[in-house]
Length: 96
View 1 (cartoon, rainbow, N blue to C red):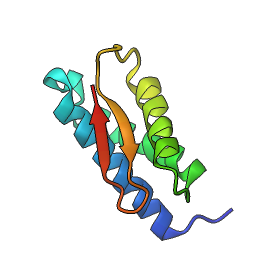
View 2: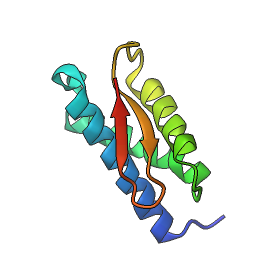
View 3: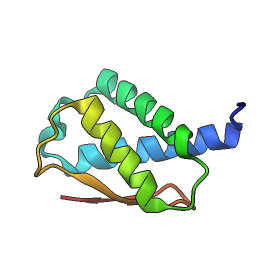
């Protein structure tokens, strides 16, 4: 299956938004420096491309949360999570 460049750009936009929001919302960014950030963004893009296109922001959020937990390992229960992803513009709302 050939992916459209538009879907790849949108998945990257969402992934970047998720990682930036995670860093902003977490205490001390939990060691998410540039190398780790790139890895997490890449894994998020891969996960999102498996489910895009979808209009279900909660489904996008669930994929992001699963990938964050898998990528960053052991996210504590008090850490930030993606609450919803806007399927129209890729914006992200986080919750603690």
